[in-house]
Length: 326
Image (cartoon, rainbow, N blue to C red; front, top):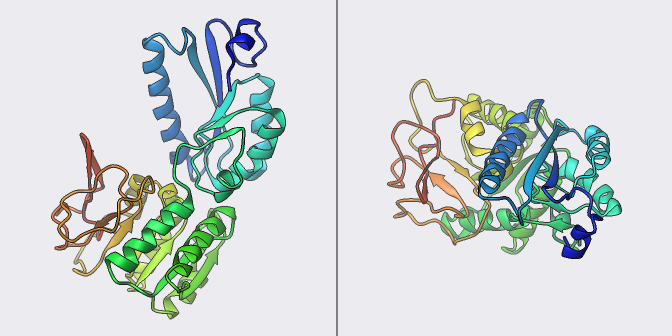
């Protein structure tokens, strides 16, 4: 992407003898702000580390981070703001609906896009010259999930609750494709308005099919209240969600169980990085890149008894009890 000759002649936008300018548009405000702010904090920490070690080719990395609130309507304004500042590349974009707005603009302007927080299949097929993917697609995630549910747990009835946007459609398509490979299809699917928890109709539709597991699609600010609504109705199937949810935020927003506890209650949280095969009942721990985190009380020894959040410990990530939601 970056030629030595063009840098030397000063022709590469966003690159000087001392600096490389990287731009980002993401959810820094609004109900899904945790997804963007955590990414930016992580990126800035890494940029600081690289800069302390001398940068890239002697050039320091500078990050310009602006807000689009995970709102497609704000994408063009944010993109033009970065373009006007001649960024070398864009990165750390959050969410399928917004990314689908940025891609054609970036490709037309020939601005590289690196590290998108979405697994929409359009990023992978067909291959895009100006897009550098660093994560698994939702097709890969959902395929791993369905394999784990189908082959590992023996579940055959799987439903989907998803937002009525391109993100929801991407995950639903992945689930359908994975189940088609098993000669099956979702027993029911219900959509809800994006960036809301108005999912009563979807819950009713999917619950009526009596699924053993439900793929619940959405960021934490919608998935958590929907999960609580399901539990408030006494409906507690095993729940699966893709990586975009933000695991820590989901657990924090869903809240802890204040009384009682159903010994059969469980939630499956998907890491979505790399499939390592179905879970086994004697798994002590879930390694980074594991296809899924599953913690059912009394089933896995890696489960902690206090209903806490997944916690990274050195090289390993341990699943903890997931029946801690109200």
